[in-house]
Amino acid sequence: MVDGLARSVGLVISGTPAPSVATGRDEVVVRDFVSLAGAVYARDPLWVRPFERSLYRALRNPPQTDGRRQELFVVRHGRRPVARACAWSDAISRAAAKGPTGYFSHFEAHPDADAVHALFDAVRAWLRAEGITHLIGPKAAGMMEPPGVLVEGRGRPVYGTPYNPPYYPGLLSGVGLEKYVDLLDFTLPIASGYPRITRLAGLARARFPRARVRPVDLKEGFEADVHSVVEVYNAAWAHNWGFVELTVDRLMATARELRPVYRPEYAMLLELDGRCIGFAMMMPDFNEVFHRIRGRLLPTGWFHLLFGMRRIRTFRAFFIGLLPQYRSAGLEAVLIEALLRVIWARRVDRLHVGWIKETNYLWRNEVSAFAGVAPGTAHKRYRLYSGEV
Image (tube, rainbow, N blue to C red; front, side, top):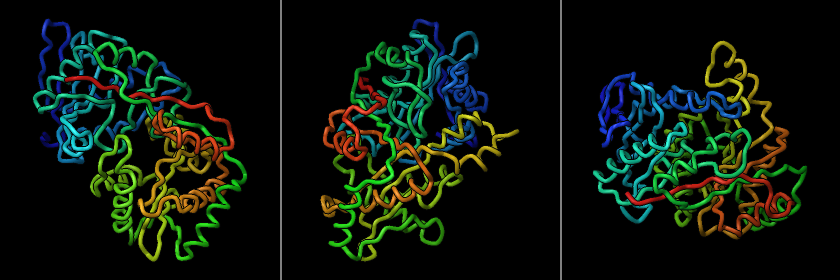
């Protein structure tokens, strides 16, 4: 699938009775796939332009799994791209779906229904050749690509969440895809104290006096900490919706992406008698800075990176989990309290809590109770679609 620095990228030519699929192995083809997003959002002031070199690097390298992928895009009027997507066939993800399920990701398109039909004809054809019968997306096999399409709520996207024009849901419905699941993102105001969390954390520490919380070690102990996080993650989320087993290689790839902006206190490990039994992770809303940079470090982007990161006042909660045998003992509060200390020290005023399945009323009520606000706090809704191949 990889030849030197160039990836094999499918080229779907629209405007013919049966769209033909060709492949290219040059930098021009990769560039066209990457550049489409800039054209789609050219006049959108809320869009956060990514660092395109990250996507270039992803396209030039094989997937971080034992799976396969194919990048596809539709062109009109010569070589002008109008729609794109990646098709995935990933053994780990297929096993999680309990059947021959494939995925699509990196979907971008102009409001061109014919082009999107041609695109998904090619996506389905590629997946059928892989033995796939069912399709879910937008969802990538890796951790860095946020899942879903924004269907409710506006405003600048928070770091690590999807953003798209309002016409995307109509385009996806128009190619025979239906709602698979909705995921909710809540915006919570940060209070100066949380008596309930403090009380539960105190009770847990009294019950487990040898429990301690520490940040991830980015130096000598980093590899050991990565293995610990993978162990806890796979045990804690094994029965959650959309769970895909995390591997050390996948987490290391994510860590390499985040290393330039990561700080040790963003992830906390909970240890008991020297063994990691839980971890929690949050990140600043880097998009506060990336929105100003617009994907370019020169001439002034580097200045914002150097001096803007410490001024971010919005954080996003990514993960919190414990080994199953330690749940319901109050230890989650110990982790949350440790993260709150970081939040208070940084003078953060808002926290985004996301990826809550719409039917998970237990967590929805927990989030509302934590924030001290009524259920139904302003949130965004992201939708994953599914369909037959």
